[in-house]
Image (tube, rainbow, N blue to C red; front, side, top):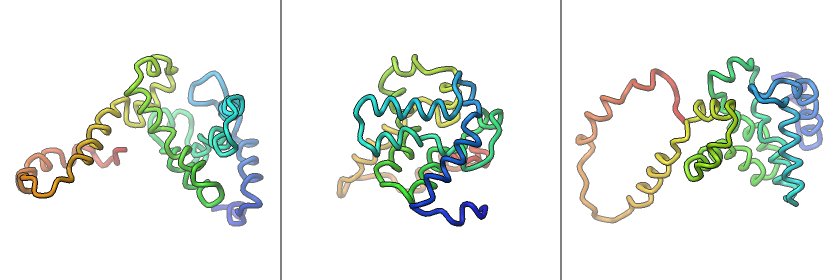
Length: 184
């Protein structure tokens, strides 16, 4: 934590973000034809053109601010998921409205969702966006939706189920297959 971040509050956060974007906004946007700042400004401009409210425009502007919560090279960022959605939401949460922060936090999940339900959306993704999609859990969001549906259906009092021991062999087979990684 730098001395600069120690003084962050509602009065200083916008200037702080502005300094980050001034210093790092010219960085390549993970292989896209625009810089990070151009990308963020274009997203906000598109939201504004659709008469979105201030919280949504701000979320569109700062949705990728989490790329700056750590110092990752572009090459490394293309090889790992830096969880910029979570990091961005975490740094914005103390200062901005919850709805705006939720949009920043959920924009990666929204991409996976759109890929799962709209094949045309998936087909429109740039090669760099497809690569980051793979790193962020892939387009197989339908699996997460299925788990959610089972979650919702698993609330019937008295329904017969096998006990935990039934599932132990499967869990033992799976244990360690993550090789120390934390899946999303």
